[in-house]
Image (cartoon, rainbow over all chains, first blue to last red; front, side, top):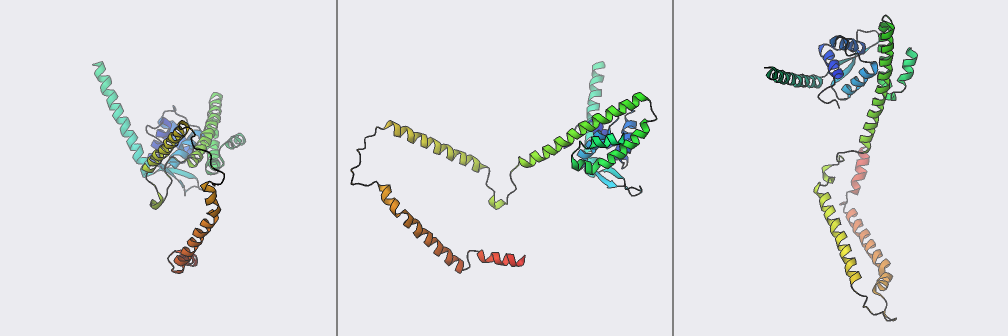
Length: 107
Length: 174
């Protein structure tokens, strides 16, 4: 089961899917773009992560109708959206705490 | 190159290949087309990343599958039984206490038996041990109760109280 806190790769995959449903290649490119080329996923890593997210019902798979070969795409489920929001809130809290502590130390 | 990739995909469990194999190969083909436009060092990096990703991914999928099978073989939770057949958790404690009590009693009995000297005189030849007298009547004793049980069951069955007749009804419904 996918546990919080999420790994950076999984977080970026979910962030990629929150915008719109995407297929595998599009996810890879979006992750690379979001991280400014720092995170480049291999197909093995991507589909391992997608498999876990599918098993845990964080994302769902569906067939894109517009494409000629019925390409598979992925989108967030309501549960996945909630979990992503929880992770973002957790990170916000940590960032706020870290900023306060660092500011207190510097002053 | 795609052939090599597809050969490496064979390392994955069959069900993962069936679900994602074709899709992974398609994505790989697109990535390969992109990387051909880049420098040699990027192409080498791409191959290292893809190969290591596939190998670690295949291992992870096999471990996941093994974990699922192991979890099914050794369930951590209680078996899903109907409430009528489920025993409370405290039963285990009581059974352990009873077993402990029985073991202590056996040990005490052995200690007592070994501490008391054998003072019983040998039996005269004409007196038979009790158990050998009983043993002769044992088959008759069991036959009597077996017959009594059969008669009782026949009466219950005849009065249609045993519920056996309902089995025919259930079979008829199906």
